Length: 203
Length: 89
Image 1 (cartoon, chains in turn purple, red):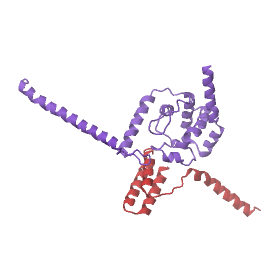
Image 2 (cartoon, chains in turn blue, green; image 1 turned 180 degrees about the vertical axis):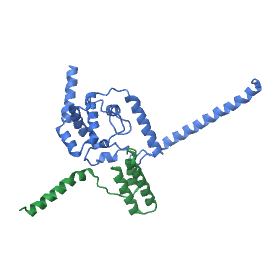
Image 3 (tube, chains in turn orange, cyan; image 1 turned 90 degrees about the vertical axis):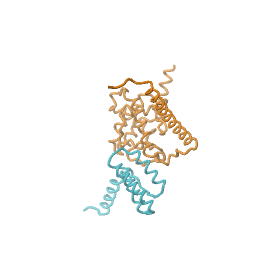
Image 4 (cartoon, one colour; image 1 turned 90 degrees about the horizontal axis):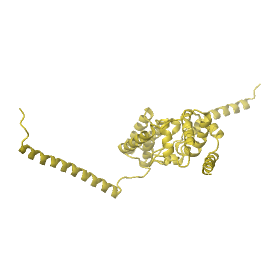
């Protein structure tokens, strides 16, 4: 039969618990101190021409992936992303704003694409992102990757046009890509349309 | 009777026209064996989607690093070149 907990037992467990708490606190303090020293001395190389170690790269990728997923998974995707007009407008925007980093069919790597770290994904090879995630990244950008937020300068409709084009991009040949871009409305023309729309709205 | 000069010219044009898009899409590799080249390659490989090409590129890069450690620069260049090819697949 078990004996009821005596006063003596209580006196024995309490110092043991205290020692545990003190040990954990000490370990945390040492870790915090080591981190502070590492940051202050600049031990971590932030140069873009020296890649992260694989665990650090994995950590950043995972943080980015989960963050985008958490914010994009309930976005409502338009059901007309296969519309030829959307794809055409998206092609014009893509050629102007995205291709310098993300490249395009038949395009050689650029100085920018070779220098970015992390590398901008070559979107002609497709992505693992959902359409909603692509839209979210286009609109909000991604910190510390070189990916700008296009939301402040482009309306949602125009950004969905680019997403529509992205669905088509992996299956395009260089000639088809060139033809699409050639026939697309110009970037400046579309931007003017947005500005005019905003002015009309203000009036 | 067909003109042989004209036929040769047409033949040349056909071959050139067929090869042109490929030469645009395919990167010309100038493989060097040094720390910068290895780092650039590592960054390229990190950005690749998981799959057979990524595994091959990683393997070639590791072999290039081993060759570099042994001061076998030609072997290193050869593996860097192969890794670059794999990153483009």
